[in-house]
Length: 130
Image (cartoon, rainbow, N blue to C red):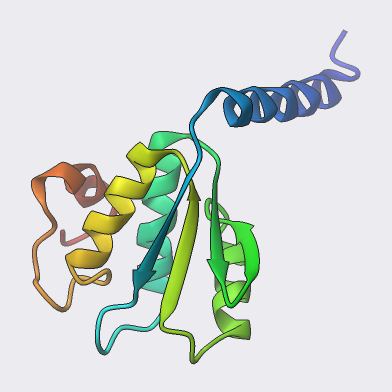
């Protein structure tokens, strides 16, 4: 009975992502990394937390290359390939893009303005000390 369950779930997950992609609006936003901020582990983790919170497909683009913005490995590899890039684009649902804009305006890694905006309060429960 359990034979093939993993395959079934994997196939269903893929179909679900395709349906979300077709049913959600896709827009693009270009953001500048805040002064003195680099896309290292903490900022990347926050970006991923925003994307995963919404559960909608979002791509990150740096220097014309794209990756899945919900994957820490994909984001870190893309950032590592382009360490000098100061502009980052995101492609996805406007609700997610709005929260990413708020995150970038708040300093991205919490160093610039300190506190996260209330709209991003869901991030506080994901990180110790926030």
